[in-house]
Image (cartoon, rainbow, N blue to C red; front, top):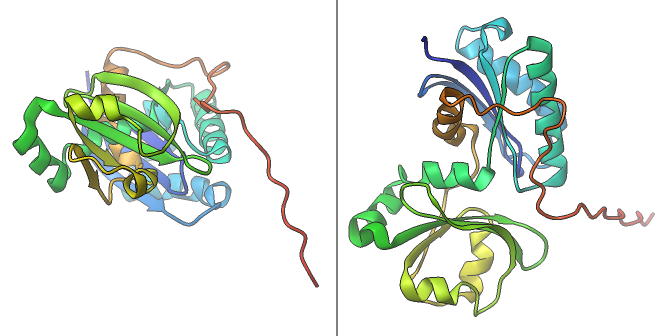
Length: 239
């Protein structure tokens, strides 16, 4: 079997990211951190990623999307686009968790690898995404990408994760880790900057799912929102 050509879409946060892979090889990556721009950028990024690799839409073997948790609007845009492409091209739809993707990719980061060298299997990976106020979406993973604690929406205070920190070293990262860093003072807590959601981090977990034929139902697949959407009312402009 030839290596599958898969388009990866990541829109769970402010980062709009698209990658194209062939097997485990990344062919192209297009991304931007411009806020609230997913709707205007995503289709253009898809075209750019495919063109940069010298491919065409008809060459694709699968469409992958980061399923959350994260921004309600961002997830909705990414998932609806992925479902539309998979349906139109009659190819499989695949999905992987945003935090799962971050955990998988983090072990290639130099600072994380240093912690692994020091602490070995005692180290847990905790990707975090910013939710509302003092809340984060967080999950705990072993170095082999096994789930240590399921993804949940956590309110962060000085006592957060104390039981885990008493028995393990924990590497916190992602745009939600800053909230934790400000209040959590524990010698077993380690904070790493610069690890954020990216379509490139989807390649390894998605390839595994493709090989196992763990495809999503295009008609019924929904993002993993975790929390209910709360609409905000824009402030009135003062003339």
